[in-house]
Amino acid sequence: MADSAAFVRVPVAEVAAEAYRGVFGRMGLFLDLAALPLLLLLAASLVPGYVLDHWLPAESLAAWGRGGDLDIGLTDIIAALVAVPCLNAFAVRWHHVSLFAGERALPRGLFRRAFGRFLLYTLLIYVTATGLILAAAAIAASGALAGEADLPAPFATAATVAVMLLAAVIWFATLRCSLLFPAAAYGRPLGLGGAWRTLRGNSWRLVGCALLACAPFILTVVFLFNAFLAALHLDAANALAARPPLGLFILRGLVNTLSNFILVALAASVLSGFYRRLALRGLGVF
Figure (cartoon, one colour):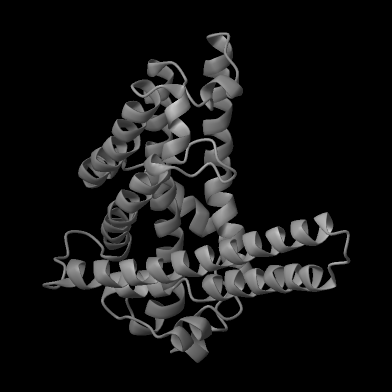
């Protein structure tokens, strides 16, 4: 199946158009599926930040990791921990909407099994990304120490290049294996090798399709949000400040959270479109 699927050229514009129609043409269904995880993630994004940023004195924020070099604090950690299960649960549901036509009943236990695999794949990606970030930070620190000692730092330079190359390799491997997600949602999970082979010949088409589906939405949100700020005689710096006005703080959290869910739905629709054409065509499903 994977060998025959390698010769299928997925139509980028067609899949992107399907993704837009599937998400923005069914906003009622989107809100039904996203309501609970969206509210949970919105609460995790707003409540800790409101307590820390609006109740605690400014000088105490540093104790919670606010304003550091990486600008990662307790609120960011809480939001990330809640985002992983919420966004993955919604992604599984939206994959099901995209892959199972009509009112076809899902197999018993499929959501639970798919959700577990989604969490596992996401954890692997997070662990890899965290390792790269820590490696880059360690290299930067070693380079700074070498600079302070007025010594050449060829090792740090070589290590930086190695980390960048490794990051590119990992990114491409993640891209080539991205059909793991729709395969798990459909109940026919693929191994790493099977996912790699299935996407052969369409990797850059998937990149182009994802950009075509997601970039216009991102640009539109940024434009509208900046236009709204300009109408209020504010600028982006005020919106991103450590202590923005409460109303702006809530609006920013709502826009960010809702945008994340829409982007997840668009990405899931794109992956499902590629999976149907590459893996399910031979089964007579598409």
